Amino acid sequence: MGSLQGKVAVITGGASGIGRATAVRFAQEGADVVLGDLADGTETVRLVEKLERRAVFVRTDTTSEADCDALVAAAVAEFGRVDVGVASAGIATAAGMSNVEARAAGGDATHVVNIDTDAFRKVLDVNVLGVMMTDRALARQMLAQGDGGAIINIASSAAKIPLAGASPYCVSKAGVWMLTKVMALELATTGIRVNAVGPGYTATPMIGGIEDNAAAYGAAMSITPMNRLGTPEEQAAACLFLATDESSFMTGQMLHPAGGQFTG
Image 1 (cartoon, rainbow, N blue to C red):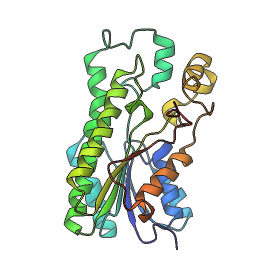
Image 2: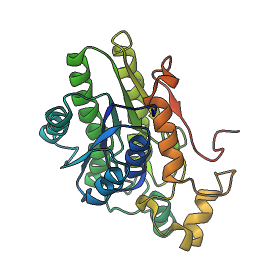
Image 3: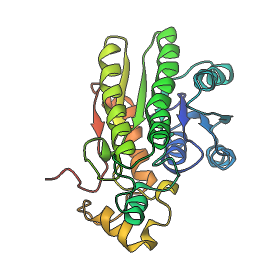
């Protein structure tokens, strides 16, 4: 039996990147999966079903309270409960490009003194408000079930490392980190654990093509002692640990699969 045998996991951002890798890893450990994303989740569903687990895709805009509630409701309708939630949906910039590419290309155009307010707001709406509403919907269902659960938020090493030109992302991920700690404290006696994973630079669509951009890749590696990108599967492994009883005495914590960014 796998470490998540018979469990039901809800994963936002499940159509690609860390969300997809986490869905597959959870399925390998016996979980059935409900995926929420604005992008098409058909391929992730196929990968999960190939592992002989069940998967459901629900088109979800995490900035919509109704969508977040409907995602969890769909999981309950299909599987009867929710045991694990992973809030992986997020964006790097309002323009969709990675922060490292934006900083390499734009000089000081993305500095706080120059950034467009709506661009700043959009990142916070997705990365903070979206995570809060996802977590809230998950926690409400877990409280109703009365037997605990695990919520995992995908933050970033940028929650702790200030990056000039990436203020919306850094601020949003710091918000996710604080949200994680506050919810962990509020739910500590209920059996619901709330933790975070703070990835370093990871080879996902969010930074797709970065290795072909010498300036952007050099900037990323300059703060990554292992001198390589992480993989989505490495981030999924951290999520798996936080989803299982192997981390049963951990709440309000953030793991950093980040290539040594915090060795100094």
